Length: 122
Image (cartoon, rainbow, N blue to C red):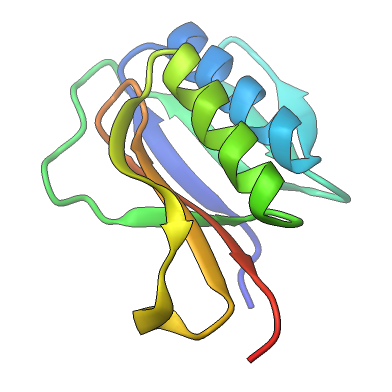
């Protein structure tokens, strides 16, 4: 459906540490790196962070990252918190989004909202 998503961040190194930890926990890897951008994916780089030097705007939206199961959601959430993220909703069932939805929410170091989600059954 989409080719890639990009976030503009104030501090590229700080954002890269956060997303390296989160993506490692859900099975993706760093696929591109330059002095101005870093990107992650599985087969192709799909999430990009690009240095902007300005703070993120409130209400910017969010990106939802698919995890392979509940354990991966839990691990990615913990990794994000350990690398400068803020909790926006602990991992747990989210039945209002479907009977098999399990998700956790973070704010990355620039304040952008990151959803970690696993869907099974129903």
